[in-house]
Length: 139
DNA sequence: GCCAACGTTGGC
DNA sequence: GCCAACGTTGGC
Image 1 (cartoon, rainbow, N blue to C red):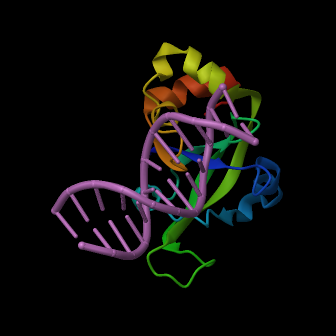
Image 2 (cartoon, rainbow, N blue to C red):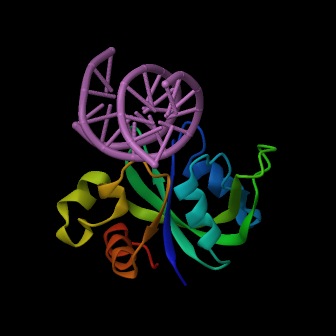
């Protein structure tokens, strides 16, 4: 199993929206960036990811599971763009803020820190463990 | 609201 | 194929 991070502006699509979809999940659509798309192509059903709120909040607020591999993005006819489906798994007891992440030397190599603009990014097993611990998530 | 970082586009 | 111009994102 691999680990990922999905970034979204909560005013557009937030954790509460994701939770409301329940086990049916939702497409992670709208990605128009090749790097992000390529990571989604690498995803397998059962992979897990952090759900991150950008902009004002800047925090990991929960975990999600990939429930469908890459398929065409229904919000465009452009065949270049694909997306996966994800469902909410567990809400963070404590949101792990970007500030907390930057303050922890074990997380200094996270893509979130290194390339803040990438909206879909890989997370290492170690980073996953550390952030889950900080968030009070079972992982 | 500003600006740095990054990606994309288009002229050459 | 290079690079300048432009648009977008996201942290501050």
